[in-house]
Amino acid sequence: MTGCAVGPDFLPPEPPPVAGYLPGADANERVLGKAFLYGADIPSRWWELFRSRALNELIEQAIQHNADLQAAEAAVRVAQANALAQRGALFPQVAGNWNSSRQKVPIATLDSPAANNAEIFSLHTAQVTVNYVADVWGGVRRQTESLQALAENQAFQREAVYLTLTSNIALAAIQEASLRGQISATRRLIALQTQLLQILRQQNSLGQIALPDVVAQETSLAQARLLLAPLEKQLALQRNLLAVLTGRFPSEGATATFDLASLRLPRKLPLSLPADLVCQRPDVRAAQASLHAANAQLGVAIANRLPQITLSGNAGSTAFAVSHLFAPGTNFWMIAGNALQPIFDGGTLRYRQVAAEEGLAQSVAQYRSTVLVAFQNVADTLRALQADSRALNAATAAERSAARSIDLVRGQIERGQVSLPSLLNAQQAYLQTSLARVQAQAALLADTVALFQALGGGWWNRWEATLVRAD
Image (cartoon, rainbow, N blue to C red; front, top):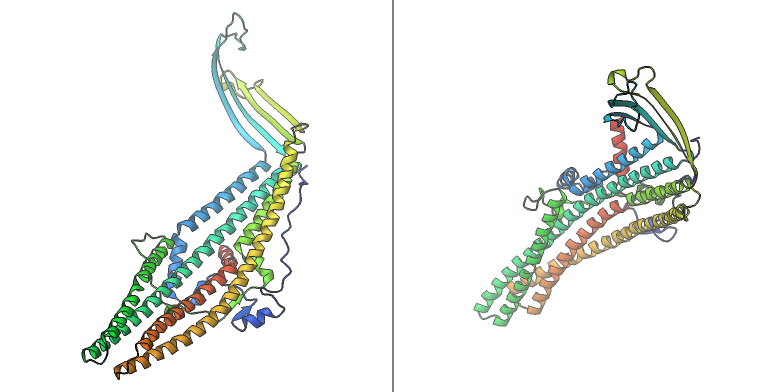
């Protein structure tokens, strides 16, 4: 009777028929060059590729103490428990019942049920009841399948929270390193401007230059100092963010500090095959699980329109005294069957099936949208890394040139050959190029993190390691 299940059986969608992330037959090789390992796997602890012990320790602390991750793990356990609870409907429901009563019969109008015709008597009943709804059409199994898919959805949402958390910590550490680099560059310029101001003041006292030249340098120095307060504010906010991400209060502070020198780019970046991306992204797998649940709900809606068969029975004993229970003549039993077929319900069940069908169509569209966004994320990140590399090379060359210009102007000033416009331009160029180099270096690191996030973060390797330990 329970050998069939109405509704469509779920089949995972096929990977999209694309060979690369970028347009053009040879775009991946031509654009990406030798910096990527095409088809390589993503390690579960991808952040270790940055070779920063402080970053590794901070992420481990976050995994242990972050409240959002703990809430996501609890949500998985809730969904799993609900799926297990639904499985119980596949089995007979057995219950024991005990009932005791004492009553008085109005013998003037009713006969006493007691053999001795007693007016007041006690009655005790002990029985076992069994109810079983035969899952002839598989509605219970489809509902269980749906809840199991939702549990899988929650598991991948947990992986998405895990990936977001680790990525956010890495990005926050990179942003802190960038801010420290910008602060350091600004302070170097302030120190240099202070030295030059002292030289100009000395030359002014000797009558070699006019006072407006000194005032112009003082203004340039004050403008450079104005840049420090916003950078220091952003750094303080970034430290608060790192503390909260690791489960600490801002007053406790983060346990590590970061600068750009402590973070290194991976020598080679792994790049998954397009056919593997849909199996690796937690959001895509969560969308697939939602699609599975919607597919199963269609089976539930169809089964609800078909006859429902219920089997029930009970057996027990009734006696006037507890000591006489189960004595000869006190036993009873009953077996019953019931078949219920909805005939007219105003279209309720029909339109619930229509709603389930449309819900399935909605899930299909949402899954396709999620896949498209996943491929867009990877393509955007690859283009960003390509641009970041060029920007960093240009910014590094510009910073070297600006530093050389500063040295030349300083030598001219020390020899009394003052050209105030050249001095101000050289100082401004040095500040801008130094900040641009720091920001370009941080952008390259941040987009590297974004690539690991776009490729799924290697959660499957962590799951495999967990299964091996369990075995």
